[in-house]
Length: 114
Length: 108
View 1 (cartoon, chains in turn yellow, brown):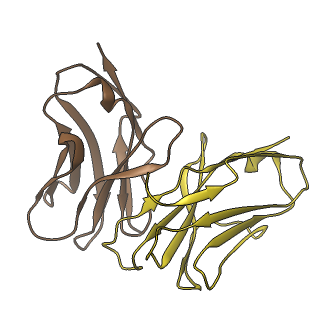
View 2: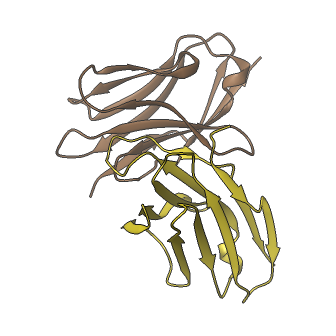
């Protein structure tokens, strides 16, 4: 158990809909990362927050957005969903945002868009 | 741009045999490098990391990796494979770039 929690575990929704994925980092971790893992694209970094501020952006679509709240939990919002958005979405956390800090991953949310 | 490349999307070894998973990086400056393992239906778990200093890095579960600047490599090894090592392994750099992963299968 990494100490990172993600809800829900599974999510099934239809194209065009909007969903929110939630992540609680390990106790004491200030940095949160979001990743998308799919068979065709592998593990892709989406976005990172540190203590409420956006720190780095990866391959995140404009239809996706995220935020980190004062209690440090984070939410990833996915809108106008397409079939291709079906994937595993992982949240990870680390103590800080420096290059050498390892990340602790949550169990993921499996999103299925039908 | 920095990146990491994993050679071999699938590797099969017999139980008790040497495990060698390959990772090469492209960077003009010494990078920070990580190996993560993903067991079925789970998130990624850190195996080991290279920051600076000793080039041979020891991780959990008997794995180790050697940073070779001359070869721009950071290959993961384990002397004797165990059935519980069956998983997918990812190499990553500090820019949050992950390799495409190598699925390790252990043959009984």
